[in-house]
Image (tube, rainbow, N blue to C red):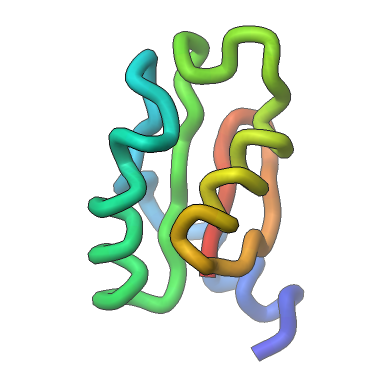
Length: 81
């Protein structure tokens, strides 16, 4: 599927992974399990996780940590495939 089709499909998804003050490392295993079960996962980066870092940077780091593709970031939410 193209990125455009994946973005359309992700629009109606609910957030299933929240990254908080414990950072990316605390959600890597959960995200990896969810990506095994479904095609797309929406991740929300809470204010405590962002600190001085942008959502785009955190989403890139998280995608790399689980070997996923970053489809898009919008606001404080990212979609991984």
